[in-house]
Image 1 (tube, helix red, strand yellow):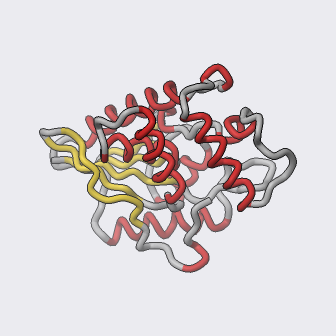
Image 2 (image 1 turned 90 degrees about the horizontal axis):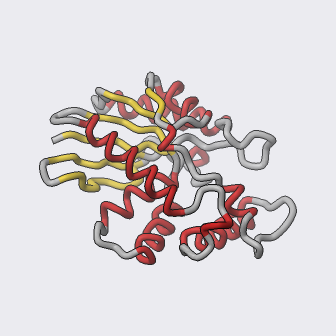
Length: 216
């Protein structure tokens, strides 16, 4: 039986010119994560990351050399929000943006507006499924693979694993619930055995406390 660790990147730089850069808190989260896993004796036999800068920086500061699989990239959340005709205009604070984000992603995942998006929801699901299957194969037997990715892909994997027979609407609701509570630099564990992958833990973050614990 193998283990696959799904790591969400450290906090990105909300409200700056380049969101895809770790904030100062994000760098600290990555350092704490790497140290915590090493203290627990977790030594990945394979490390994969998405192609985004925040994925690379998280892996580097945690001390991992990683292969790139762009299938683990986050969906373009700014584009999804902008494609919602009801989205508020102008600069938004974190609370207001979170509300706009939740409404916009609910529309994106509804399946009724695919032509409005550069990457429709079914295409996002399909690429994450393909990268997840490849990562499970890397876990092997008795090995530990690790993926540094984003909240959206992790939520999609978790939704799939907790209810493999979910219809599209149920899957979208599960995804939304998982996606809104994922903590920066958290770890979710998947065991990979003869019967297939199963979700073991979700959103582990004992290395974080106080101001260094963030959701966005």
